[in-house]
Amino acid sequence: MNPAFVNFIYIIASILFILGIKMLGKAETARRGNIVSSVGMLIAVVITLFDKKIIDCSDPTSWGLLAGGLAVGAIIGAVVAKKVKMTAMPEMVALLNGFGGLASLLVAAAEYYFDSVKGQMPSDFSKFAIIATIFIGGVTFTGSVYAWGKLSGKISGKAKVYPGQKTVNAVVAMLTIAASAVFVVLGDFQSGLGTMIAVIILSLLLGIVAVMPIGGGDMPVVISLLNSLSGMAASAAGFVLHNNVLIVAGCLVGASGLILTVIMCKSMNRTLSNVLFSGFGATGSKSQKLDGEMKPMSTDDAYFVLEAAQNVVFIPGYGMAVAQAQHAVKELAEILENNGAEVSFAIHPVAGRMPGHMNVLLAEADVPYEQLKEMEEANRILETADVAIVIGANDVVNPAAAEDKGSPIYGMPIIEAYKAKTVFALKRGKGAGFSGLENGLFFRPNTRMIYGDAKATINDLVAKFKDK
Amino acid sequence: MEIILLLFIFTLAAFLGFELISKVPSQLHTPLMSGSNAISGITIVGAMIATAGTEGSLTATLVGTAALVLATINVVGGYMVTDRMLAMFKKKGDK
Image 1 (cartoon, chains in turn purple, yellow):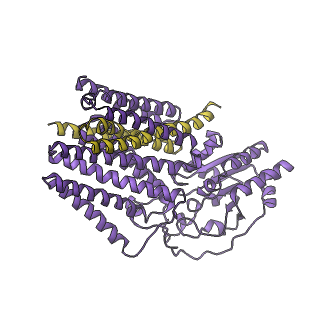
Image 2 (cartoon, one colour; image 1 turned 180 degrees about the vertical axis):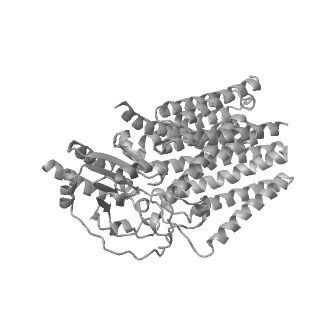
Image 3 (cartoon, chains in turn blue, purple; image 1 turned 90 degrees about the vertical axis):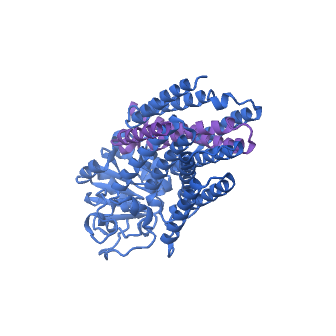
């Protein structure tokens, strides 16, 4: 088939990706947008079968591997996508990201190796594209897998810092860049292959050491950044293969992922470099001494307060995801509504472990869309709210962000739970939040602590309403 | 010249990507991320070429196949999981 025709179809695929992303940005069209973009992917895959290099292939083994690879990947992907729990979505996204990055790395490595077998030295620009793909793909892969480990609790989610860490990371990064430069300059395959392997190892190492000092609460930023990087890796692979659909699609993802990363940073009033390099939350930082004491409350008393409440705001955080309490929360919300109260949910942009994490969980539990409020609107509602129920959220409701200039989170926009007449804080124990900060909200005179597993507590309240 | 053309495409796509995403409600951040994650699986096209376009080097073919499996998981898993999430959002819109 004429290569121009293949490229023409690639343009159509690119248009579908662009439309798909655009539609994904609006609630009414999001689902169709995803389908539009998947159709783009399908036609890109099908037309690639007519790519000159593939159509000229007479080796049955290659065809077998092509069909087998597609089939195996599709089955694994489908099974995982069906089985994964909504609460496990952050780690799922991280893992898929990592696979994309590694795939790009392998594509570039295979191309270079094939060039060496043919004995055709690629141009300096191609070598640059190859090593850039490997570099970005490698960092994306191990960074994502490490993030997956943190998110799924396989390794501690805390930021890991040690003395001299910044120096070690800088050295690893410099070595990777230096080895990449050597690769581009080298003229013979033998040393070229060796250098390529060195860059692969170094970039894999870099991904790990870079994510190590970043704690769980900063994961929304890290995941969207890694998403952006996996796009850039695909785009770089496009330069290796001189393939325009890879360049366009990869670059779209790279750019949109970067925007999302910046949005996440802004919602915490921190810079990207602060998130990536500061080791935030690793050390229990010193904040101002807090007056007052935490006042515990039993669910019996909480029930009476809720029974009389006219306006209730739920403020979910990562703790709700851990306790898998979203269905119980929805049940309680429904009961409160039937009891005549106005119910809403205040969602902080970085609550949870990935962008939009709380929205996904509450959607799974069937909480009506209209009840989910973004931060600004939620803060208006809270001014007249009778009860604010904080479920496993901490830093995003910490008044220190607005009041304590010495606090590391000073300036971060928060959900102003303290404005409500009464605040219930559902919490497992007295520990500090992800940032390691004490939360002044819990010491306020209008705050009552309800200790215990969030799901058990909510179920308890639900039972009390039903017994009535 | 071809390289310049490719860089030209790259630059335009970058600006387009920035423009497309600037005003997305936070409700949709997760599906947007996993949906665009599936698009980054476009490297599947590269993996296909690396699998069946490297005749004569079994090593390159096998490395390409590994890439193909990973990229396909990324694509299929990414689209399906995004659809699953958006299906949940959809239900409430209909109410």
